[in-house]
Length: 451
Image (cartoon, rainbow, N blue to C red; front, side):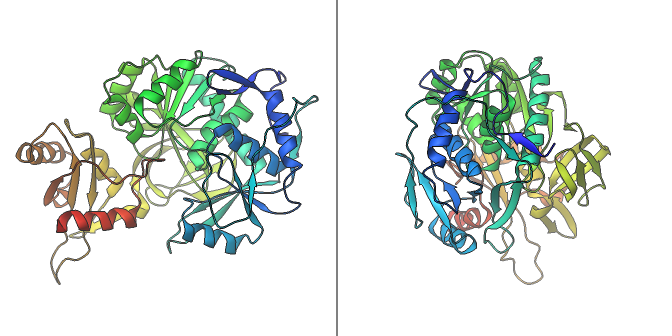
C-alpha cells in the first residue's frame, strides 16, 4: 500500500474532538482542513503555534494536503525559532487567538464555512509529515524527519495496544483529555494522531490546573483517557479534589514509580499505562506499571543487543534504530528500562543513570518530587558527590535526610548516595511537559546551593 488516509473510519459524523462538552464531527474537521489548506502559501514549512488542540490538528492536515512538513521544535524561544528559520527559510507560523508571536511570517487560523462532503483524502505513505527537532549535543535543534506511513503504522499499533488494555476491540468512542501539548512528540502521537488514525476523540483544550483537568474529564462521556506526565499526575493527585472515573491513564516523558501508579489507579479507578519511546523510533512499548517493571514492545517490533547497545527494528521502525537508553533485553519483545545512556554519570569508577536514581528518589515515602544533580566543580583529585533536591512539604530537614537515605541505601551503590539533600518548594520543571532541561536545571541548582 503506497497511500494512507488522513483520517481512518467510515463514519464522518463521529466526533474527532470535543470543545466545551460539544462534539466536533470528523466531517467538520475535513472541511476545516480543506479551507485552511487553500489559504496556505504555495511552498513552506509550518510551525503550528495553535494553543487549541483541534486547530493544531487542522493545521497538521492542511499542511499535509499542501505537501508541507510540520515543524516541531523542543520550544518556541527566540534562539530556537531563529535556528529553525535558518534550517527552513520558507518556514511560517500558524497562530490562533492563543498563539504566541515569533519572528516568522504569520498566518492566522480561520474556521471553514460549512462541513465537507466526500471521503477523507489519502496521502502518500512516503510523504514527509513532520520534522521533529531535538536539542542535540550542541544545544542546537536537530531535525528528525517523520514520514506519514510509519506514523500511521505506529499509531495503529499503539491504538491496538491501548484497546487491549481497555478490553475493547478498538478506540471508537474513547474521549481523551491531555495535559501535554500537541507540539511535542508524545502529545502529537497520543492525542492528535490517536484521534485521526485510531478512532478516539480529544478535548480541544489543554487543562493545566487540577480542577480544570477534573472538569474537562467530567465533560466527556465514558470511556475516557487522561494523557499526562508523572509531574502533572502527581500534582493532580495531591490537589485533594474529587476526580471522575478515568478508564485509562497514559503517562510518559519519565519513569513512573509504582507507588504513584497505584495511587493513580485507586483515585481514578482505571488502569495506568506507561509508554516508552524516543524521537528517532517513535512509540515502542507499554507497561502497566503496577504489574511490574517489564515493558512489552508493539507488535512487529523486535529488540536486539543489550544495555547501552540496544536497538529496535520492525513494524513502523524500518531501519535498525539505536535506543538512547540502557535496556535489559529479556527477549525481543520484552525488556526492563534501567536508565538513559545520555545521562550516565561516573563516580569513583562506577556508572549510573540520573533517571534511574531519580526514579528511586521519587519512590521515597513523603517525597512529592525530587531530582539528583552532579556538580562539575570538584577540586583536583576530589570525587564529585551527588546533590538531591527534594520537594517534601510534610518532612522537616532532619527527617527528610534520613527518609531519603533509608529509601536509597538498599537500592543504589553507596557512592551514589547524595552528600547533600536540599529541601526546595518546587523544581524548575517545564510547565508543558514536566521535564527538567539539563542546562537550566544546572544553573538553578547552582543558585540554590549558593543561596
